Length: 109
Image (cartoon, rainbow, N blue to C red; front, side, top):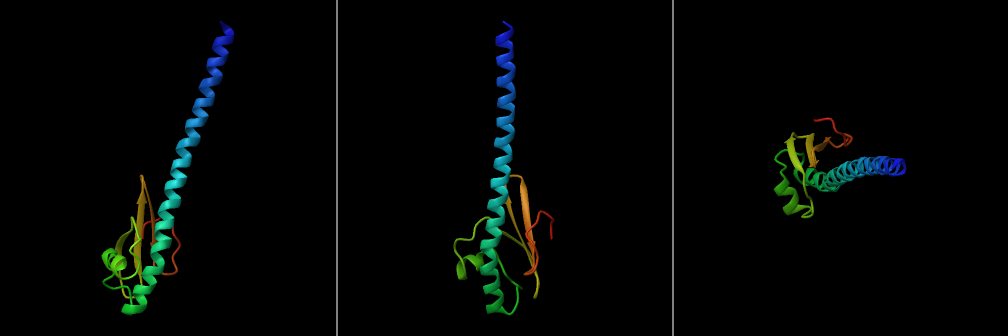
């Protein structure tokens, strides 16, 4: 009887560790996808700037139609002549990039 209890406790510990790893891996995968979405969009954003002398008026539709139809899951938050803010949300987490020199981070623009 004691042996069965010990086996059940060990199994419970292994299941809890496995579930924790699974949910952590899902968050890391979502984060990697969101950051990749932004990196993919940056080339189109910079091409838009070159053609339009700035970022003013840049929209997701303009980026997709004129520069990169494969851009996905990006939101153009705001634009200015020499600056912009884009975001990508996967799951419950959002990643942001402000301007051409900005880093991709979880800090809102």
